[in-house]
Amino acid sequence: AQSVTQLGSHVSVSEGALVLLRCNYSSSVPPYLFWYVQYPNQGLQLLLKYTSAATLVKGINGFEAEFKKSETSFHLTKPSAHMSDAAEYFCAVSRKGTGKLIFGQGTTLQVKP
Amino acid sequence: NAGVTQTPKFRILKIGQSMTLQCTQDMNHNYMYWYRQDPGMGLKLIYYSVGAGITDKGEVPNGYNVSRSTTEDFPLRLELAAPSQTSVYFCASSSGGRDTGELFFGEGSRLTVL
Image 1 (cartoon, helix red, strand yellow):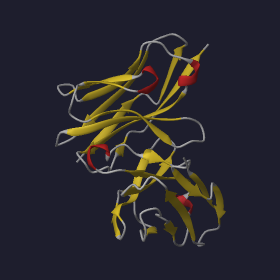
Image 2: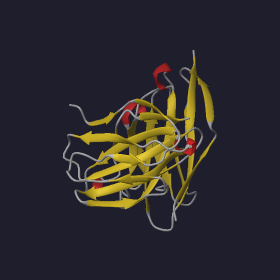
Image 3: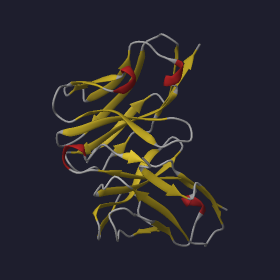
């Protein structure tokens, strides 16, 4: 079975500060891991994905995530937050090649001026 | 480029009514999915399809049905609507192979059952 836990349902940072959104996964097989972002009243869009290649993955809008097998983590970071980063972020896990994603509960990122 | 299109965007149903949420994609993707999103719960997979004529249940299929007669369309049918089906529904699609997990989502359909 696979599962994802996102630590913190709400995260608030100041503009220009580091963004860190935490995700831990559980998987009995080597996982594929994803971060998706959802802006208000929109569908989700892919930020980045880990598919067993490089453990440090770079995505769109300056975000990156590092796969740490020993910690079963896939935390999302961005060095400097921008007001436009305010959104809900979802971590997800799947088995290789299935497309059946298991999503975490989501983390709402607030960016303060 | 339209991507994934869902209709309707909003709908209010009475308990016991039925309806179909429509989903169409123009990317020639083989894989299509229906998720529901509830506050604080993330997204839960209802049904998915790996190609025309092939569908399978996800995590929360009870109360729903799907069909996949063409590559483009993947409608979701709600029979005998219940308040527990109040949710935001998302259709998504993906190509196969290494990009199977890269889902393209529609804008969602907000359903309220009263």
